[in-house]
Amino acid sequence: MQPTNTQLNLSPPSGWFKIFGIVFILGGFAALFAPVVAGIAIELLLGWLFFISGCIQAGSALTTRKHESFWFRLLWAVLFLVVGSWLLIRPAEGIQALAFVVGTLFVVEGVMKLIYSWHWRSQPKIGWLVASGVLSIAIAMILLGDWPQQSAALLGILVGINLLASGTVALLLGFRASVADNTGHNKND
Image 1 (cartoon, one colour):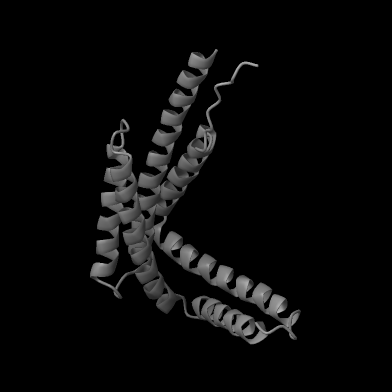
Image 2 (cartoon, rainbow, N blue to C red; image 1 turned 135 degrees about the horizontal axis):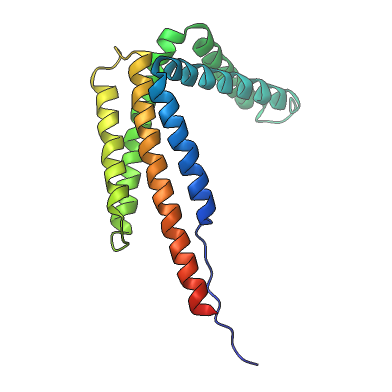
């Protein structure tokens, strides 16, 4: 019996990178075209997600009233309901809070991109990921620098820029993965 030479490929298919890239780029252009609407939409979407999640968690908690985790689950659901309601009822304050959260998220995203790019620094065109990470951190500093005076427009513009950068990187990685897949298939044929 002859041993087979199979490689385990754990990377996602290049098609998904391309789809995410296109969706992010379109979302980025939409946010830049209507930044106030984008800022308010992001805040309201988050409010609804918290509220709906709180309702689902409350329902789940109520089905386990006799379980020892009931009170913890119920309090967690109430927290989500309160935060979701607050975001929906008080959108101006919600945008300020969201600017802080998004700024913090962009710092973490930027740092993770830089760590990833350092780990994979021998890969060609990894500089695009470095640029995207630096841009994420720069956007975060703008958001957090004047916090809490951010307006919905600034939040929409900065999220739009970040979506464009992330979408471009995802597209480039998708095309890079396509080339690697095609090269790998030709060698094995």
